[in-house]
Length: 67
Image 1 (tube, one colour):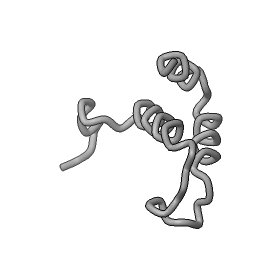
Image 2: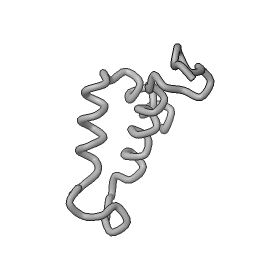
Image 3: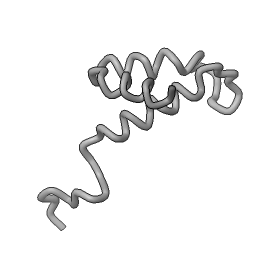
């Protein structure tokens, strides 16, 4: 079942994925270590998917950054 959910996350657009990630975090005024988040697994999978889509990666190099 996890694989099915992951494929659904990969089919979402970036903005839809960000909206889902923010909506699953519960009350953002409470510090993360004190939140009682029933959607913790979905929140984590959304975050990992956003990281996977990130254009910055350790394997890609510096892309023209002057040293």
